[in-house]
Length: 405
Image (cartoon, rainbow, N blue to C red; front, side, top):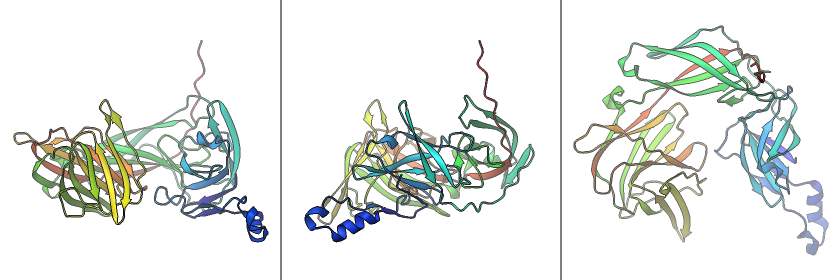
């Protein structure tokens, strides 16, 4: 391991010996000196201030598998790491989101197949963490028209070394008919040191915060002023598009509806749909491509190129779709789409979406349409904001089940 950095700080590995060699060796020998490994802005907007980046010299790619920080009791943080990047042939980085932040250093298991290698990682965080106080169950929280009660907690663990899984039980109450059909969504668990997961964290922390959201999803539950309409739209033919350029903005969230795209290949030049003169968006430098497939093959993809001053994006769609971008969409929120033909009521668009990301806060998304080219439809767009509820609890250590004969 060569170094670590926290948050959005950059990281440069350039040993003094290398710097001196570049300065004093003859030019014919300088070519053999490795260049500096510059992890400039290692997280960009893909992570947050609580993330740790680890730089390794790893010529055998041992860090390319799974990576698990380990606490003082030997429990693994399973929801912790994601891919970092390669820096030359032998240098690699990876990010850690959850780890024992109160320890000055901690081991990380690098697991690849049946092989496990352990490295020790120093912790640059200073340990000035807030103090949380837990409450006895049941706990009731109110947010606007909804009250949510945490009535019970169950902790499960299938084997030693696993942190386990938290299963809470909630009950919801409201007198507002617009929230009667609301659903719980997006639960997460945090500890006061900055760790966050969906199942469980280290039991060395005496208090966890359970964060739960409640959100509306039914069309009839929204007020007219919460709904944007686009009427009498013709589903485009393959390779064509219908620009909309609609914006839904709330607090720190922006949903930008680019328009409708036909199936097949669609080429945008400098953010302009074919056959249009209106710039829909400013092209991004890169996309972290995320595509999903069904029986028809690829659902959604993009290739980029430049010809002089032209930035060309070649998009591929398996079927007609709504194309939109989201910026700052929280885990508690959802962008809802409803459509109706000439003789039907609004129905939710339920075909699976796909997305491409150029950062943690920015995504370009593909919402397939269940209509054929030439169909005339009305669309409704809703940004549904979730209500947040926080509960402070004492985690119970799970009992590992005994094997039975």
